[in-house]
Amino acid sequence: MITRAQGAAYRTASLIVVTAVCAGCTTGTSRGPPSGPDPAGQHAAVITVGSFDFPESTVLADIYGDALKAKGFPVRILPNLGSRELVEPALMSGLIQVVPEYAGSALQFISLGRLSATADVMATNKALAELTAGQGVVAGLPATAQNANVIVVRPATASRYHLRSIADLAHVAPRLVLGGPPECPGRAYCLPGLRQRYELRFKSFIPLDAGGPLTLQALEAGNIDVALLFSTDPSISARHLVVLADDRRLQPAENITPLVSRDAVARYGAGLMAVLNTVSARLDSPSLRALNAQVEDTGRTPRTPRQVAERWLHAQGLLGKERADR
Image 1 (cartoon, one colour):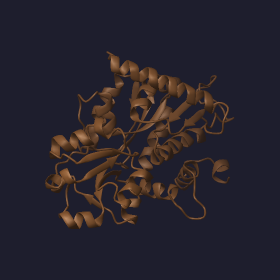
Image 2: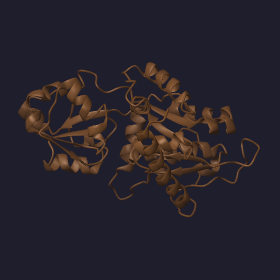
Image 3: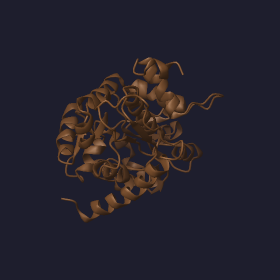
Image 4: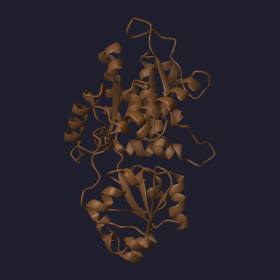
């Protein structure tokens, strides 16, 4: 049953994604179908691969999408569609066909909070697969790569307040400002979870971006004291930030898991899922962190998410010779 809130989300997502799809037909943002044969032996409907609005998700969409294109599937990649509140309804309503998701957060979101993921990878994936099966969506195999929320502070803050774990924040949180993605106050594994699991009450919360440059800049400038970042962010080690241990296990297993429209699977058969699962089998957390570092490289030759994705696929032998030699 679709609630009124879900219906509103579906309508909003439909408008935004339809606009993005139409724009992608005439601009260079999306990559259209290749000239190769239709793997289903019939006129192909384009498989639209969507991403959330942060760089890692864009790289993942490029990786899974380009792997499909290398096998002859007609693919359009739409990056930066928005938050989960927009992307998931678009997937379930058939506006997009593939989304590389984060298992724990997807399970909690799609179930409207009725199901909570744990740190158990296979249990979380099983629950997600069973849940999405009733939503017209097929869950692929999880990659070993995962990217969880992490709570970080500057070294000086950790030293001043003797912070090693999130629980250590309890006695000082009322004096500290938390910064993170705008969705944080409504997400179970962000502010609500920190309040319920750790009983944290911060002085204030400043909405910034999803583990991106705004949050990092605000933390380094002292505009916020505590930040929510992603565990695969290379800036954490590069800037010597302190990750506070999640000693009460708030964060769930967040393994990268492709979610695919059941209609697309029915149209293209088992070969579609086989390609996606092959990608997942090669993707681990160190690789994901390295991919993020390449996108964020501020050197003389910065690479786009698409270039980073293609280099990784080439190294894994997942691109055709023509694409690899380009």
